[in-house]
Image (cartoon, rainbow, N blue to C red; front, side, top):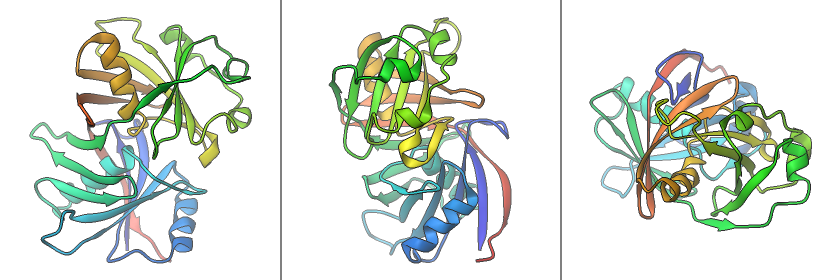
Length: 269
């Protein structure tokens, strides 16, 4: 079967967030899916298979880190939609059936893909004991996110603080269900993006995820309330970075970005 590595939320190879993508006829047993994801050893590997025509959704979609299955993943959904459209396997809008509900993906004329995800709720919570120490930075505010995400959105003082983070990943593991999203407003309002973020997910086997689409379903309402605008641009990443364009639509958040296939080959398993 064909396996592809796709860099998501970028139009340049070797940047953004890489994801493995396998299009299947059906899902094999979970243990096989997990072994493939461990072999690929990226933050997420997506597995998809077509569903019968005429239903609410077109493809079934699942995502695995090297250690576990997750409820929601943005960059691997973008990577999957990119593969479907770039190979001619699908045309027009695609509807995915996933653990977090129905997700949409539409190829735009400019080469980007717009995904339709549920907007996360945000609940203010006290700063967890040890968070500032493990991050190595003073925390401005902390918000918990909805089911299927399980992150803490942690606002820091400014963009340079976010960029300079070198956290204790092992210690962060116990502080949230899935991960920590550190964020701040962009230092330069004219720099082409409105906010920055970095995502740390040691609880699911990922020390740092370069560009986390699902986290932007929480970052979009968080920063839209701050800036008073529904359309924003986020820059995420440390060594690798990517751009996520967000559009808040009430209980849905649209995530837009590029993707590029960098590796394609045969999986012998």
